[in-house]
Image 1 (cartoon, rainbow, N blue to C red):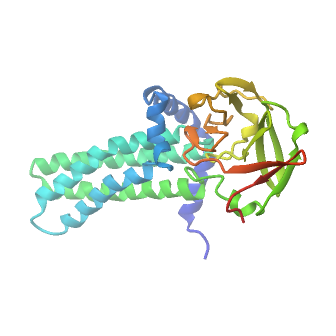
Image 2 (cartoon, rainbow, N blue to C red):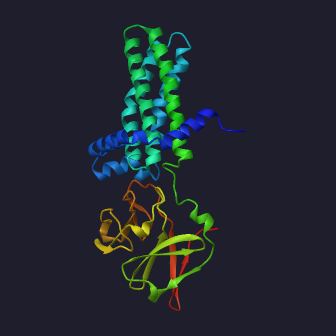
Length: 309
């Protein structure tokens, strides 16, 4: 079965460059309003390990769908108005999380996301008018506004699904590494060939790895950023809280770590990961980098990814 025509129309939004001036303007507002970084990390979902926006979406959509059901049953006017109001209030944190994620996406994703957000703004406005009309005793008008709002927010939800599943926004872009990397210990490089306190990358078993040598210690992560597949070897390295240089050019800021731990930041959106554990130290990434065990055998560094294969 072929795709419906509206799916192809939705895909065309990805390349609608005419939206870019508005995207840039809205992105500037979002980045100017939503700060500092710890607040952005919470809204991204760093503490919980995945984006929180999809979780928060359940509150307004659940309230509004429930209100639609109660609208079909006589005698539930007060309960329905409460549900409509709950959905309106819960839009604020939901939108804050969504806009924060959106501001750290690729151009094609941001174009679709902008229309997704516009749909939800229109739906929220319709539900707000519905709540007002219900309070004035205009129940029928309030119901009609709610039903239109539900149709609009459903369309926005479809765009959100396209953004999440078709364009992989918010997905873990390093999830495939354990399935592609060969099991067991694999040769990586001669220890003497690895530069001190510099990012070094090499392909092992078809998977790009990034490594940092500090004396006889070698830390190895997957080179593909879990956020949107950025090349970590082109990012910034911090060793013991000091910039240790980079193996490539990067415009990203100097990365940092807690307690002076070594870390690397992605050059695309500045996500920062601990080299020692792979965990996220700074969003927008929410998924950790695959961390490889290392050992040195006769001067040769070998790597192993636990549970690979």
